[in-house]
Length: 471
Image 1 (cartoon, helix red, strand yellow):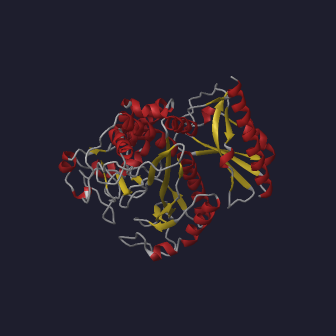
Image 2 (image 1 turned 45 degrees about the vertical axis):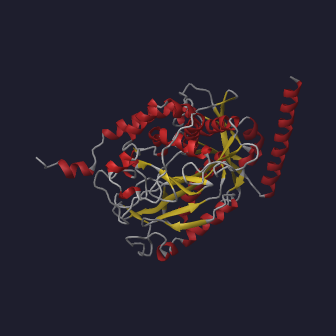
Image 3 (image 1 turned 120 degrees about the vertical axis):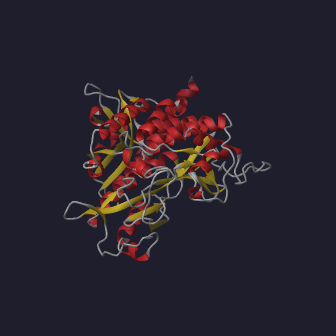
């Protein structure tokens, strides 16, 4: 008992010292206000702005929120307050509003951790991972569009010089030049916040861009993606544009993803566990350890349920259509997997292995809630490791997109769900992935089924054009 008390006192002392360091940092930076930030079930950031004089309050008791006013918090109007307590490791100055600092928060109700909070739930799952001796390191690559509305209210790519009109605009110099100031602001501000942005580019669609981040642990990678979206929206407005992470804002252009690079590391040493171990046989010919292969096996086994999280709304499924139906984009490719495969450094796979140090998941939508995605993947990946799930042979040197649908099925590839309802029903039936979401799982299924029902009650212009006078 005395050892436990000593440990708690030591942790309290450590937190107190950290708190004073943060307080001093805020003072030196001239911070006047703090944004206490958490996300709802959809990954939408929610904040309160508090004066820096309330620093003690938001670190100890938290900023108060009405839980029923936020999607997916498991509280009705009679519920007790959600208290958002700041994580001392996440404070940073907002470079574009330098008198403001932002901090990621964990939610509490009646002084107990509230596991409807996506961030709190991810911390739970990372704790489960650590108990097994693992840590998750990853980095997102957020694609997004800069758009504007014309005088008729129609959505168009942001193109002030009217030069971003190539059929294959990816990496185009002229297209990028007109957005260079925006991208430089993003890189400068992001790196001031510790993102480790190492490149940016014009992506495959007109008006589309991508940013690449350094590796970090899973929790901070999710924090970083949310902050990036917040920043992009603010910076785009400076140039008269709207930054959108909508998965498919244009029916004839490539959609936006949030590609995820990841590996497992040893929880104590930090050593990457995906490369082949000394003396270990190269089982699948990719230079990967059995830990890596079994982790991918778990992800592939549970991919339909994970898709409900990776592609969280109706529009996302415009991006991952299977090819069994007529589909095209102006560049010729969707760049999005519709079948679940894994293999070498080949962008036609869902799980691409650029090298033996990591995998890239190419399926997540630009609108993904990263906390929920990582929690779901941890549950599925651990299932793969613990049950030694074999994902089958790696597909090497082949273009999956050029294969017939029958050939893909013959090779054991699972088709991803083709609409939100199909994905949510898969999630509802998958106990492993649901375990990674905790109580959020039931709330998520309920809200997404309601979203599907609302969508099905709407008549689209396409339907009117197609069917109004067909008979």
